[in-house]
Length: 155
Image (cartoon, helix red, strand yellow):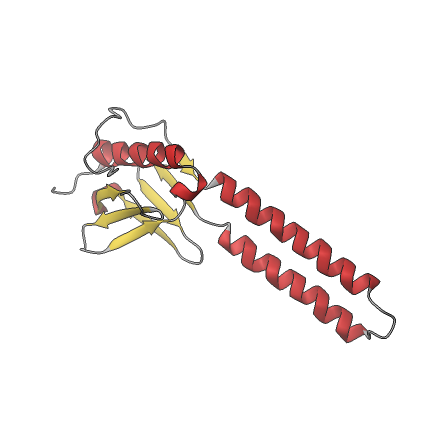
């Protein structure tokens, strides 16, 4: 379903509004916690032949795995009257509403794609059907309503 053609939401949501992939975030942060506990426990309870540097290395691996999982859980999108802040895995970008020409979530898309006035596109990983298709469609429609209400770019 393409959100571009759907105009079922007449009013934008109350701002500020933040979208996050809740299920994905819960799973990833839970796995990060399990990683730290497991590797720390393994380092502390390992065989007596392990030396200090072995134990520190194992615990460090657990922390490194947890850090990667926390970065993967980072995506969010926050809308306010001035624009949209998109936080993806590593990068974040602040957009004014006028910069956003289109909001797309087509069948098979892994997340929402924004068409920007400069000719580029921007993924909004925070809105993804993998965390719940209905919620993603609703969030994409809310975002589209914000673009329609607050954007001033020529369409």
